Image (tube, rainbow, N blue to C red; front, top):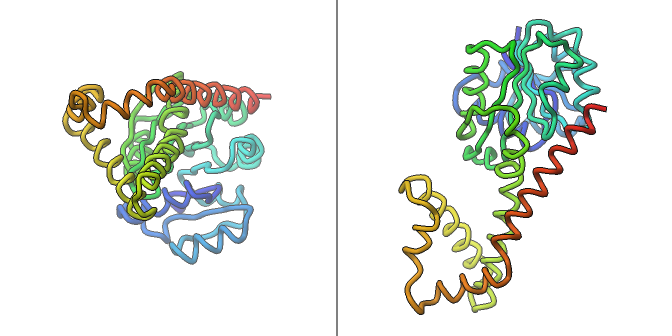
Length: 270
């Protein structure tokens, strides 16, 4: 029996596989994958050296733990296909908006299911993954899932009723950060900086600011005040951001993503 299998090998699936191998949790030959795209399968096997299954059900036969890394609209079909091959096995889903209940409705209430919301910084081993489990999951199985996703960043254990909010904040959040980063760089270019230097400074600045929040144990408002001198350059810029409604726009963007996550879950239940 192969320890772990991935159904779906998009960017997130590839990131997790790579992280598992880099962390030394499992060697490449202990991982099996299946993807409907032969191009993706060839790419992953060429880059990482993992095994390939002939179908989703064939993978489910081989693997002890199965990670569902397919698009939300494919979850029901995939779970239905593998349901006769996963008795007593751990199922981990990273599909946005898909509840454990949706999967349990197909597999049965005693199935061992863990829902995970990772995010794209997992590609550089700086991810944030939230985990919620079904009632049948054991502590040992949950620790297995934690170890898998710790290989690509940080993990948190949450109640599933918070998962849509997590999806909106940390799942969609990197895209919001990229937009702000691009805008910072554009501002630098407008002020005369070369494009490559502006982008490097914007990215490094955002990374450093985030690290300050994580390490200094101070509220972001306090850290903002450290930079904001009376009648200085920073307060002039902040005044424009407040006038243009940046704060409320970000809040509304996260809430819109939250509502969409709820909608995806409802659609998958039909």
